[in-house]
Image (cartoon, rainbow, N blue to C red; front, side, top):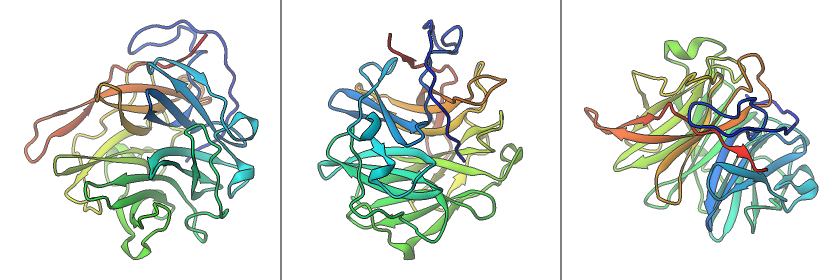
Length: 315
């Protein structure tokens, strides 16, 4: 689960992979990060702002600026335009039918808002959560090769675990009869504290569906990223026996809540957050690694490069 924090920028010194600014003070302060590439610009969204969702932009994935969003207070999404008053977490933005759809959580309910620009303002014409009678978080969208859309999200039963539902063509309405569980806590590395599988993201390679997800509490230094695969977007899902794929790389702890994206050259990458330091959780900060595949017995196996890149705030 997520927690809000204030953004306090300071000075930095840029350095290479598996290291970052020498004093750690000018890293990009985004938790639960997501990156959209649109028209040559990278847009990063994440948990952080008290009154909504902010947006950052970059041309090279290294140097980032906090963008002037189209909503109030310079945000991409402001609470006055959507359902909910607090706890705006884990946004993801997709360009669909010529518009931009933001999937996010507010007050531990999953929501979706729409804008004509990646900068916002993202607005709900009808201010309501997608599931009104149940707390859920971390909704993410996957569109298959046949055009069918699926939404994955976390439900608070048996701890926190991941479910899927097929969506109508409007990308907003659920086909609730298709809702089913995907994964839950089932491996020893996931049992540090508490019972959490959350923050997933799904892609397809050839005929295999890959789900990256996070386990343990986001507050735990043992927060990490695992992977599961399936032959259908509805599952069943099988976790890698050698999970986690990424946990405490280099000097980082509390690594997780990731999303996959392709850069301008088509290279697959993963963005994730980590704790501020070994001594402090907040503000959590954004990192990027490369993703590659190697041959396995039944399908190609996903790997995450432990040598990460540290995005920084532009001078």
